[in-house]
Length: 159
Length: 183
Image 1 (cartoon, chains in turn cyan, purple):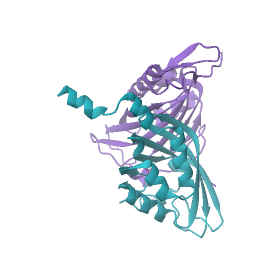
Image 2 (cartoon, one colour):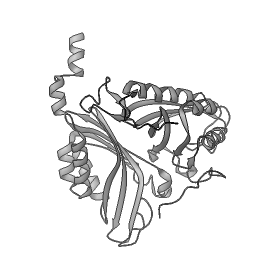
Image 3 (cartoon, rainbow over the protein chains, first blue to last red):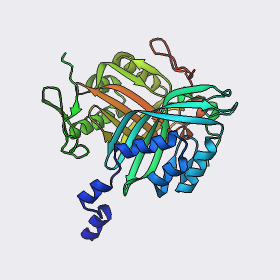
């Protein structure tokens, strides 16, 4: 019983775990791909297939759903992320991010506030908590500093 | 007061419970376990509702607090705001469920429990009836440490667990920086 319990917690040796763990460069690599709108590559490279993805608007499970949502939710604008605070541990990471949104068209229902084509919005109002498993992200949860956004535009797309 | 920069002298060890942090002259300031213990103790003290005690013990005098409603500079003003915002008829308990630690900062995901001792129709999560208890896992905070105390607090939330009708800047008052929409 005890052996089985231990095996379930740590099937890999500490050396294997170390080699297999996500590190700071991996986290930044994911953010870079995300910022370049390479969502499919970002998610397939860095997320487990059954990854859980939760932000202020939706909760999803599975890489394909995450990719589909990221692509669909970025129509009409580009988003560039810059980490301003990053803590990476073997089991997970926490990141505070600056967001820069470039509107490519008028968006009256943009989730921060209505924007005009060509307009650029910046905010430091978002953070991510990531959990790792087998060297990939198995859970990504996003939190916000709400007052930097328009609360009326939230809660419109909860799935 | 001597200013100390806490930083990790042993990146290889970092992430393990034995990692230690040291100042520029090599003096050990806080271990990872000490930082974890300090934040857990702070959250326990915060949950007592005695904000004077909790903040005197755990915050620097010039601490900056920022959440979804306000940005406040200075421990005394933070104590005032905590006291006023919790005088609406409920108690709050915060329990850390995930703690990540670096050399001078830490990030925490929190579970909150609110219990109303009178009706609280304008509670920021949802309206509460006397005796009602609600729980949420929709809160996270980033802390920076200075001289073994908390010098910066940024509190984030997952909005879809909250009541958007009661968000806004209604509680920002004199001495508290008003909330601003991102320009």
